[in-house]
Length: 94
Image (cartoon, rainbow, N blue to C red; front, side, top):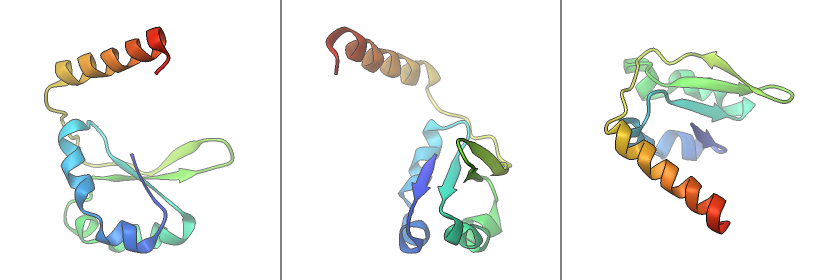
């Protein structure tokens, strides 16, 4: 998930595209005033592969589902590294 708080950050940032190799799904969480920009963004006009989440009272809900299943590369390595980090946090507290 990528959280964007300003229009400039949302429209100018392209580094999130490099995250797709590590994702199975990808969503933006945008403030209410940026939602219309989601539908006008260049990537939305071409592939509509990323979804949009909305914040409700105490939860998030899918407002626009993603339409393209991203396939994370090297699942086993990613899971190993996540497990390693969580183990350190549990054992050493960081």
